[in-house]
Amino acid sequence: MTGTIETLEPLRRHLLPIAHLNSAASVLSWDQETYMPPGGGEARAEHLATLQGLAHERLTSPETEELLGRWLDLKTGEPLSGATDGWNPIARALLRETWRDYTKAKQVPNDFVRRLGKTCSLAQQAWAEAKKQDDFASFLPHLTAIVVLKKEEVGYRGPVPTPYDALLDTYEPGATTAQLLPLFAALKRRLIPLLDRIVHSPVKPREALLTRRYDRDRQLAFGRMVLEAMGYDFSRGRLDISAHPFTTSFHPSDVRVTTRVSEQDFTGSLFSCIHEGGHGLYDQGLPATHYGTPLGESVSLGLHESQSRLWENCVGLSRPFWQHFYPLLQHTFSDQLRAVAFDDFYAALNSVKPSFIRVDADELTYNLHIMLRFEIERDLLEDRVRVEELPQLWRDKMKSYLGIVPPTDREGVLQDVHWSLGAIGYFPTYTLGNLYSVQFFNQARRDIPDLPDRIARGDLLSLKAWLNERIHKWGRLYTADELVRRVTGEPLTPDHFLTYLGNKYGELYKL
Image 1 (cartoon, rainbow, N blue to C red):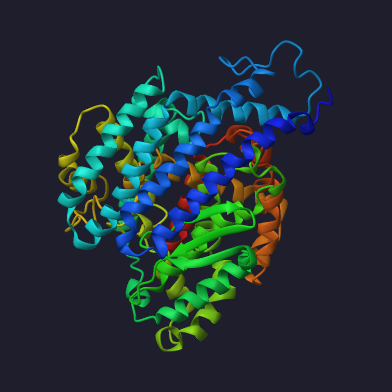
Image 2 (cartoon, one colour):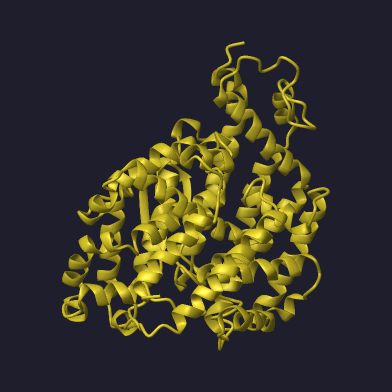
């Protein structure tokens, strides 16, 4: 027995076609969100359901079971006695993560996978039209069907402390509701009083500076320039337009990001580019040699989100970043910004104000949006609320958390694409990503003491190289908890994030 990854070559060969099927499905999903004609929806739903079903069939096949069973107890995932003695960590991790994927896939019938895939594909298109028309009633039957299916999925997942745990684990392996509740409570205790102090501060940034007419093509060109400065490789990527910005990856050599554009506010497009670019850099930085196996994938969505939020907030909203890029932005939009002083621009960019739209929310209020969605999802799964009650429930929670009430469902319950994708249990990863992002960035600053000066010179590649080396290249070799401890020397904690917010906004608002 060699104890190297080559020992598992038959397993790797078996997994590769599954990755090909999933990549093909991702191409079709990307096309559905960007260029597919409206009339293609029904056929596309069938295409996706077929590909997802085939991938599921192969992953749960007797051949997978036989290959894993050579080394592992399939009930526990533990190595058979002596079977992996002397193996290196990569081989052990490949077995561990493949067993996890196989076990989770085996829990749900193939028929369910196909039904869910088709339902979500149709729902995604219905959501886009419902949002455009501000018509929740047209989306209601689709969302109702998805909630029914997700409850069915919970039943397949086996005994769990709460229904939510069964779905959360899909996106953030090992995370539980019991872990999230005190985390959210700690954030709420600090964020709401800080928000109140800011709202009552005499300092009032001039937000109107940002809401002038900004040419669409120039916005996209500037966003592309920033992505290139970040190190996003356009020979292995694309930038396109979609209703809800997203990143999709078919292989480290083909990673695509999208943005949205409003001529009234350049920040939506630019920060979507930076946010999705952070995701894109992670996917481009994953080990191509492990493509087709779990080790070629990101460790969790919380970790993935940490990369987008690190670039969007810790970098993109920082003074050093704009010391370099603000003159370039002024040159691009000279009529709008040439007379706007740097400090006024920076304050406007970092203004804190309760807002209806999550993706436009400032760093401080963003997590309150996530808590709202987390609570609604738990209520849905535990039958404390019906789907048709969501618009009013959403308005009530917005009033409670942020003191504002969305005037339309487009700005309320219809604003996010995630439920149409069946991604219930996903939203907490955004808050986890925020916490990881600051903890990682603080470590990067310790490891690269002149990092702020480098960013102020427009050198973003030093940070990208650090992230590639410390986080991206490991794929799923380590669990999320193991990785954050390896990188920062401590487990995930909200302290870094809360200190960052307190310092930054204490200075801005003279608290």
